[in-house]
Image 1 (cartoon, rainbow, N blue to C red):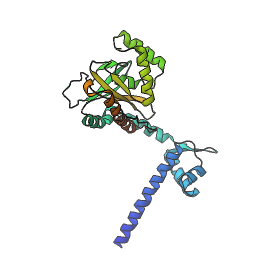
Image 2: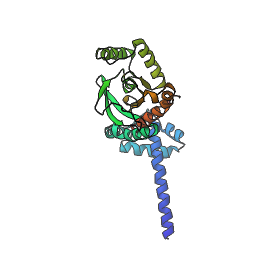
Image 3: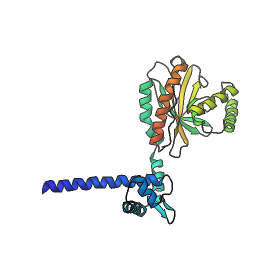
Amino acid sequence: MKQERSAAQAQIGVSGSQTLMRGLDVIELASQGTASLTDIAAGLGLTRSTAHRLASSLVERGYLAFTPRAGYRLGAKLLQLGHLAQAQANIVQVARPYLEDLALETQDTVHLGVLDHRHVLYLDKMPGKRRITISSRIGDRQPLTSTGLGKALMLDQPVADWIAQLDADGHEGGLHTDRDQWLTRMHGYVAVGRAFDLEENEDRVRCVAAPVRDAAGSIAGALSVSSAAQYMDDDRMQTLSETVVRAAQGISRDLGWSHGENVVAA
């Protein structure tokens, strides 16, 4: 009798888990657009009655909403939870394990920064193991157009904003390269999803940077690996690009980003 009861409890557990997974499948299907009961049943391989039971339960809890003659869509509960998740996703806390792993893997200094008005603000830094000094500090504000982090933060901006930022940084003495060359490089950075600092911000220091995105797909910050130019020749910067982009995408996923990934080729 005891064995039969244990077997029955195990079966209930499996059934409950399957129901939960099916409910999540329904939510994910509805996230792609308004779905009818027929869409849900066909899309998930369920009977119409099972699809109706799951969808009705989700509507009751607020995870789905139903519009007659239109179908099911995401409900207000998910909007509420999304705001809570976003509020709880502190970018420094989320990014720290990636910064630590990247510093260990590359032996170089790793930075995390965000856009602060018209500058990049350094939020975190993991020193490398090489016998060199990178002068950056947490809390520093640096020009956007001469730093790898800054350029990565600008990748989604229109060209007109790039030019305005170039003019602003030029007046502050923050641009150490030719304007046309800088713009050409920026277009190239956009194409591959990462940016370089080629000793533009600090002599004999180079870096590879990539943007970090939030749940909406907007650039929320940027990640970079910096080192002395002697350790950062052109070939290594290309090789590091994939590593840095992967780390930035990992942080982005943990912040809720779920779009397709374009890992730059080395």
